[in-house]
Length: 436
Image 1 (spheres, rainbow, N blue to C red):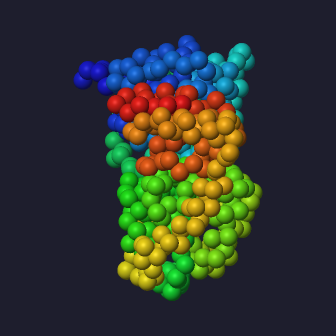
Image 2: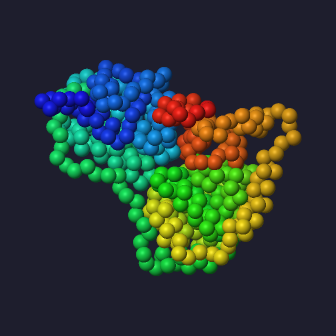
């Protein structure tokens, strides 16, 4: 922030400075008179503002920067129709677990008391799809923006909406003496009878299978911890589409990504039925089709996830809302006698059956087109894909070798996301190429 010692920062300055401190370097949106002060403050704080054609695209570009940098995405919208245009991408952020800070300009409440043009209750709309909607208030702006960032990043990430009245944005604001609070830390499974039961199930298993979901990506050591664990204990791993690459998909223990293909479900769901222990690792069923309702016997499931089970898509006899890495650590000192080689032999027929299901004898069609595209795709690249039948097909192909190398909308499955996701990823990490 470039204010001098004799100057008091404005509300917009505080918002910009706290976002910059959280690692934000890019914001996206369409300006209006109500957010001009914020755009100036973002520039002073070292945050580049990127003009977009539509708020929906701006939100996806902001998401792309999060995948590349780990800092929250920032979407700026003006009053009324601007924030209304953003609803789709904010709903996508809620269902795809994206920490998106959504800032809307706002007519001052004293003005809105006798003025109705473009005025509606932004918070009432945004609260439907956000972790919180906060109206920034004189005297508490720095506390509120810190709270927004903390909420967006804690637990399962998600969007937080900030309504910024013009007067609060432009008026001097005091600095709080409150100490900074970090995002809520994920706990370890509590010791006790349930943990001992999970350890006993795990130690006795001979045909374990693991399924990994998006939560794994949101722990710093998550993908590496899962890879080490399945290799050490010989556990075949399948993933959701978002978690593709947690284990490189050319790995002999990888069973690839699944979620929306009945053809692949017919191959992998029987494997879950035959397993004597299923490790559910950060698995979020919001990505899955209805065929994944109750896909296993809950009595043989050990689940570590970042969110409580309020979906009822499946059950787990042993389940914790906790760190996936800490959960695996709690099981680490015990385990089945299976070797990685034996597990790879178990996985091999499934991998072969999935490959056979993808084969086609046609000379042209979506399968052939995707094969040609993937053959030309550089190794160190971020790929994005739009929603539609082609997305499901691409998501079934095992070509991803690292996390967040394929970006898509999997919870809301909204169209129009591929190009702005690629733009955002390329803006935040220009040294890596992005292909939409």
